[in-house]
Length: 128
Image (tube, rainbow, N blue to C red; front, top):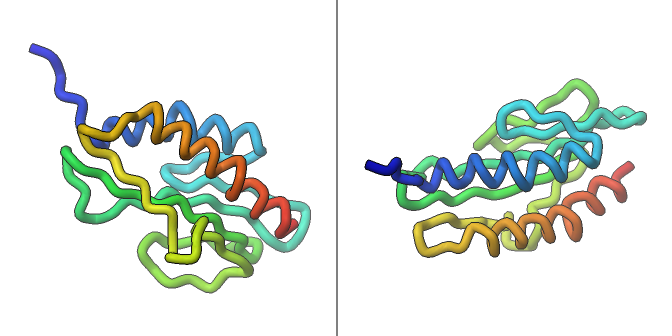
Protein backbone atom coordinates (compact mmCIF):
# COMPACT_ATOMS: atom_id res chain seq x y z
CA UNK A 1 0.00 0.00 0.00
CA UNK A 2 1.57 3.31 -1.12
CA UNK A 3 1.01 6.62 0.58
CA UNK A 4 -1.14 9.06 -1.33
CA UNK A 5 0.65 12.26 -2.27
CA UNK A 6 -1.78 15.05 -1.48
CA UNK A 7 -1.57 18.57 -2.85
CA UNK A 8 -0.72 20.11 0.56
CA UNK A 9 2.25 17.70 0.72
CA UNK A 10 3.32 18.77 -2.77
CA UNK A 11 3.14 22.41 -1.65
CA UNK A 12 5.33 21.67 1.38
CA UNK A 13 7.84 20.05 -0.96
CA UNK A 14 7.84 23.12 -3.26
CA UNK A 15 8.43 25.36 -0.25
CA UNK A 16 11.22 23.10 1.01
CA UNK A 17 13.03 22.60 -2.30
CA UNK A 18 12.35 25.82 -4.24
CA UNK A 19 11.06 28.78 -2.24
CA UNK A 20 13.05 28.34 0.99
CA UNK A 21 16.46 27.85 -0.72
CA UNK A 22 15.93 30.86 -3.02
CA UNK A 23 14.92 33.11 -0.17
CA UNK A 24 17.66 31.82 2.15
CA UNK A 25 20.24 32.56 -0.55
CA UNK A 26 18.90 36.13 -0.62
CA UNK A 27 19.40 36.47 3.16
CA UNK A 28 15.87 35.70 4.36
CA UNK A 29 14.97 33.58 7.39
CA UNK A 30 12.01 31.21 7.38
CA UNK A 31 9.34 31.10 10.07
CA UNK A 32 6.44 28.92 8.99
CA UNK A 33 5.18 30.33 5.70
CA UNK A 34 6.79 33.71 6.29
CA UNK A 35 10.27 34.63 5.09
CA UNK A 36 11.80 37.79 6.50
CA UNK A 37 14.98 39.80 6.21
CA UNK A 38 16.03 42.67 8.41
CA UNK A 39 17.50 45.46 6.35
CA UNK A 40 19.85 48.18 7.51
CA UNK A 41 17.08 50.76 7.28
CA UNK A 42 13.94 51.20 9.38
CA UNK A 43 12.17 48.52 7.36
CA UNK A 44 12.00 44.73 7.15
CA UNK A 45 11.29 42.65 4.05
CA UNK A 46 8.72 39.85 4.17
CA UNK A 47 7.57 37.20 1.71
CA UNK A 48 4.34 35.46 2.67
CA UNK A 49 3.07 32.26 1.20
CA UNK A 50 -0.64 32.56 1.77
CA UNK A 51 -2.83 29.49 1.22
CA UNK A 52 -6.50 29.60 0.37
CA UNK A 53 -8.71 28.54 3.25
CA UNK A 54 -10.70 26.26 0.93
CA UNK A 55 -7.72 24.08 0.04
CA UNK A 56 -8.19 20.34 0.30
CA UNK A 57 -6.17 17.20 -0.43
CA UNK A 58 -6.93 17.43 -4.16
CA UNK A 59 -6.55 21.15 -4.80
CA UNK A 60 -4.32 23.86 -3.33
CA UNK A 61 -4.32 27.55 -4.25
CA UNK A 62 -1.68 29.88 -2.84
CA UNK A 63 -0.12 33.27 -3.46
CA UNK A 64 3.29 34.79 -2.83
CA UNK A 65 3.08 38.30 -1.43
CA UNK A 66 6.05 40.60 -0.86
CA UNK A 67 5.86 43.26 1.85
CA UNK A 68 8.17 45.96 3.12
CA UNK A 69 7.11 46.75 6.67
CA UNK A 70 8.21 49.27 9.26
CA UNK A 71 10.77 47.66 11.56
CA UNK A 72 9.11 45.63 14.30
CA UNK A 73 5.82 45.03 12.43
CA UNK A 74 4.81 41.68 10.97
CA UNK A 75 2.30 40.88 8.21
CA UNK A 76 -0.85 39.10 9.39
CA UNK A 77 -2.44 36.47 7.17
CA UNK A 78 -5.85 37.27 5.69
CA UNK A 79 -5.90 40.81 7.09
CA UNK A 80 -5.50 44.18 5.46
CA UNK A 81 -2.27 45.58 6.78
CA UNK A 82 -0.54 48.89 6.55
CA UNK A 83 2.89 48.59 5.07
CA UNK A 84 5.47 50.72 3.37
CA UNK A 85 5.26 48.80 0.11
CA UNK A 86 3.57 45.65 -1.17
CA UNK A 87 3.95 43.60 -4.32
CA UNK A 88 1.40 40.97 -5.35
CA UNK A 89 3.36 40.21 -8.56
CA UNK A 90 0.64 41.48 -10.85
CA UNK A 91 -2.09 44.10 -11.10
CA UNK A 92 -4.94 41.71 -10.31
CA UNK A 93 -3.89 41.37 -6.69
CA UNK A 94 -1.59 38.38 -6.61
CA UNK A 95 0.05 35.58 -8.45
CA UNK A 96 -2.31 32.73 -7.72
CA UNK A 97 -0.61 29.36 -8.02
CA UNK A 98 -2.61 26.17 -8.18
CA UNK A 99 -1.69 22.57 -7.42
CA UNK A 100 -3.90 19.68 -8.43
CA UNK A 101 -3.19 16.14 -9.64
CA UNK A 102 -2.97 17.34 -13.25
CA UNK A 103 -0.46 20.16 -12.53
CA UNK A 104 3.17 19.34 -13.28
CA UNK A 105 5.22 20.10 -10.14
CA UNK A 106 8.41 20.72 -12.11
CA UNK A 107 6.75 23.28 -14.39
CA UNK A 108 5.10 25.04 -11.45
CA UNK A 109 8.40 25.01 -9.57
CA UNK A 110 10.18 26.58 -12.53
CA UNK A 111 7.50 29.29 -12.73
CA UNK A 112 7.90 30.06 -9.03
CA UNK A 113 11.71 30.21 -9.37
CA UNK A 114 11.30 32.63 -12.26
CA UNK A 115 8.79 34.78 -10.34
CA UNK A 116 11.15 34.96 -7.35
CA UNK A 117 14.10 36.01 -9.49
CA UNK A 118 12.20 38.29 -11.90
CA UNK A 119 9.69 39.97 -9.56
CA UNK A 120 10.11 39.30 -5.85
CA UNK A 121 13.83 39.82 -5.29
CA UNK A 122 14.00 42.90 -7.58
CA UNK A 123 11.03 44.34 -5.66
CA UNK A 124 12.98 44.07 -2.40
CA UNK A 125 16.13 45.48 -4.00
CA UNK A 126 14.23 48.56 -5.23
CA UNK A 127 12.78 49.22 -1.80
CA UNK A 128 16.14 49.27 0.00
